[in-house]
Amino acid sequence: MSALFGTAVAVEAGKARASRVMLSITVILVAGVAALASGMLFGVASGDEQLLAKLGPLARAGGWAGLVGVVAQITSAGGLLAFGVALSWLFGREFADGTVGGLFALPVRRSTIALAKLTVFLAWAVGVAVLLTTIVAVLGLAFGYGATDAAGTVELVRIPVLVVLTALIAVPAAWVATLGRGLLPGIAATVVLLVLAQVMAVIGVGAWVPVVAPALWAIDPGAVPAASLAIVPSVPLVFGALCALAWSRLQLDR
Amino acid sequence: MTASAASVAPVAPRLDARRLVREFPGGAGVHDVDLAVAPGEIHAIVGLNGAGKTTLMRLALGMLRPQSGTVRIDGVEIADAPASLWARVGQLVEHPLAYAELDGRSNLIVAARLHGIDRRAAGDLVDRAIAEFDLARYASVRASRLSLGNRQRIGLAAALQHDPTLIMLDEPTNALDPSGVILLRESLLRRAGAGAGILVSSHHLDEVARIADRITVINAGRVVGALDPAGIDLERAFFTMLHADDRERDAA
Image 1 (spheres, each protein chain N blue to C red):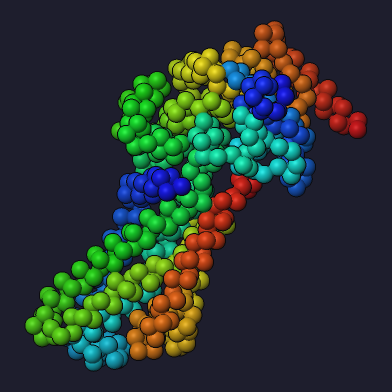
Image 2: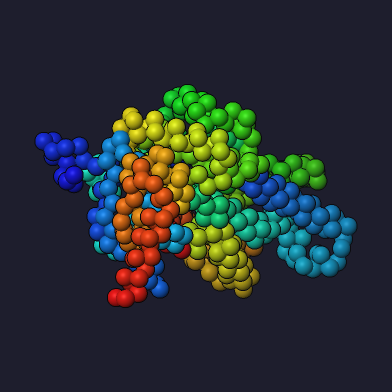
């Protein structure tokens, strides 16, 4: 089993590496977040009243806390969309491309392939977290926060945590893409998750709802206890298991 | 031939499907079909579009679960089949396993690895498959840029390169050019000669007659008879059989 799991991971990683889809999502997410965050910082620096009013406490925070707060809010929404699309592609493309038939009658179980896909996804999400954190650090240094707010550098730690938590709550998209036999059902599930998380976070409820906690934490870190972030992994555990079950019992009957 | 796999019995069939039923809403599907493939045998199933050939293959490969009936490979029910048994199966039903983003060689490596071939052995195996299926020109070309016929050739190489002892191919000559058809024919005859059992579906009666030991005719999800591969005017015999079956069902 472990040798075949390793094989499945190697195969899935090879497919993800060769595809332009994963690379494009990475570039769009990281460059998009960096561009939006720097735009907002320039706006704040120029004293744009409208933007200052919209950013509220974040604008007043300034320094690393302000930068990380802006990045966190963008990432909690944009990241969820990006991760949901990536999962929808990883799982749904086998149906859309017709390659799913070739994943039957193999020594590698289909449930193993599904878990390998999730493993590759999580490894990629960790990579995205590191990349985004690095870019935000460079951005902050470019704005001079290294000198003016050295003590606030610790705020950067929130970015990789938020990116990984956001990736974890996107896992239901993989299950829905499997049940729906394609990319679009997974993307639709992502949009539903996104709306649910953002609406509840904006009205300030759902600290103990795993799919809402990361977005709420991005807006208001003080409103979310550490224990509620610690239960976020229940989402990928439950939906990862459902995914493995769905792939194990899969039939080509549609 | 019996289905028992006792040591004193003759070698179990490579494939032994008994009383398979899988019916879809509207009445299509497979209704009570028996099908066997012996070691070294090429068994062709022929029928019109929608006759149930693909459904039958899907049932035999676990892509569909039957409402009743059993499928055994080398005497083992497929629901209980261990990884080592699936490693001896090669199949291509409908779409070839050719990922658009991977080149020809990478696709074959993926197929080899998924069939349980370890990383070190996979390279040599794939090199042999590239030579056998004349794929050298496409080894470093992404599958998305290949013609349908060449993707099919990659898919066939992916299904056959690990020298399976049970091979199931659904309309394998689809989109193949004449040289591809000849390569496939030789490849299948060679593998059957080495003991593989081969189930192949087709609606090209002449093509099937060249390689099959046995031809089973499927109509409306049932086995309605057999054709003699050495017989003359297979087409007439085929349609006579279908029309007789259609009349019989209409009368019932």
